[in-house]
Amino acid sequence: MNFNMITSELNFQGCTIRELKVVNNIVSISSDVVRKIGLEIVPSEIIMNQEKKYGKLLMKIVVELEENLKNVANIELVIEGAFSAPSSVDENTFKELVLINGAASLYSIGRSKIENISATTFLEGKIIIPMINIYDYYKEKKKEIEEMKIK
Image 1 (tube, rainbow, N blue to C red):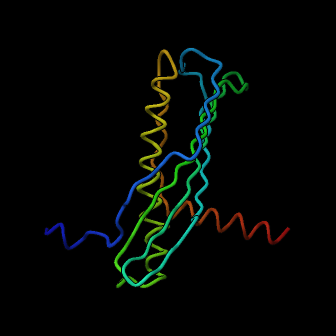
Image 2: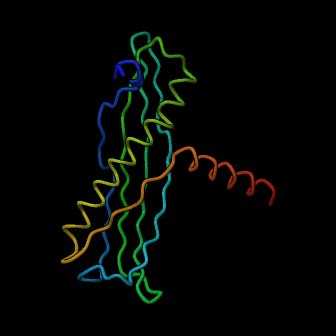
């Protein structure tokens, strides 16, 4: 297969850590520790001009560790990713590319950062957060919004 035939028109420009908070009350991660993971994705900026389209995406990943029903550690990471596409990509396609492909890329980067941060935080153990399906994330968010409208 020719790899160039399946590449996305979305280009990753880079990312930055906007916020990082680590609260830790344990030395090592034991097998009894329960991990709770939260995720929030927010498109923060879309700029269109004649040469290129630019978009930014904010992502907040929260990891809470509990032991014996008590919170023992938290990591909150907010990262912002920047993306671009040629001006030939229409606006709706570009927004979708940022929300799906961009979010998937940014989540992978966030997973790596949390793994590295946790590996240097604890004497033993590290946090490896699971991969997710970005489509399912947006489906669940849509359900939450609809349920809030019903109440």
